Amino acid sequence: MKKVFIAVSFLFCVSYFANGQTKVSSSSLSFTYNGGPQQFTVTATGNWSIPNPGNWCSISPKNGGSGQTVITVTPSQNLTSSARTCRVIVQPKNGSAAYCDVSQGFLLFDISNSISYTEGGGEQFFTVTADLPWTVSSKPDWLTPPPQPSSGPAGTTVVKVSASGNNNQNARSGEIKISCGPKTGTVSVNQAAKSQYASSPKMTVSPNLSVGSAATVAYLNALCYQCNWTATEYPSWITLPEQYGTQSRVVKVNIAANSSSSSRSATIKFVATGSHYEQKVFLSVKQEGKK
Image 1 (cartoon, one colour):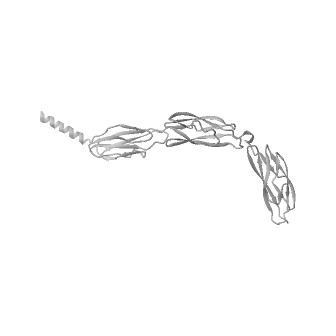
Image 2 (cartoon, rainbow, N blue to C red):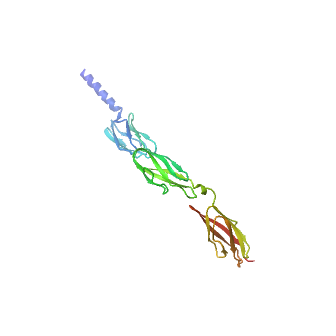
Image 3 (cartoon, one colour):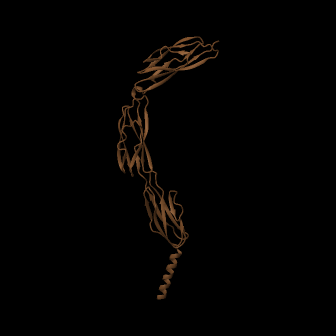
């Protein structure tokens, strides 16, 4: 009976090693967004190898032999907006493979996309939800005072943003930039133009002039709504008895005779100024050459 027992025991051992059984000490590893490393142990009865599980997950070593081998798994930082997974497969030369599933979380950093103001400004709010502390790194100058708070801890924070009134004829926009660890986010900020300036040019001058070579007196219609205007640039062969004015009026233009056989042209530049803005208007003047 003793000999039979030894023979059976011997056959069992041979069968175990012939199957090339491979085991891992952990069937799964879980990582934060920041990556590794973590380790598990491979126990094998023969040679084995590990195919590349993904470009974001580093494995070392990737092959080995009989006995126990410690495997180091090192994911890179996950700066995407979703979790990710891969499977580390320990493939023996003979026998069934063993697996270790790797999962990695992501850095939660979520902020409101945009806020908008009327011309009068006021207060608006956006929300920051983050896994790490965050801070406002830049903002448009016309947001005063700075966003409150301008930094915060991990979690969810409501941020108040104040804008001054927009006294400009143009709408304005910008971005609030927020840093959170390795991530940066932006909140778009827009504000409407002052309503009395919101549509169309506020000064028009017409018509464009086209005259013969002789000395000419012409008249322009300068329409200026709630503004003062000045004629600032024009050549010496053009004179304006009135170089500035208030509101709308008819403007007299003296054009000297052209003694050259070549035609000539110029522009008269008008600058209109109001309490909160400036506008430039250009009028074309063409004169024929002497025949």
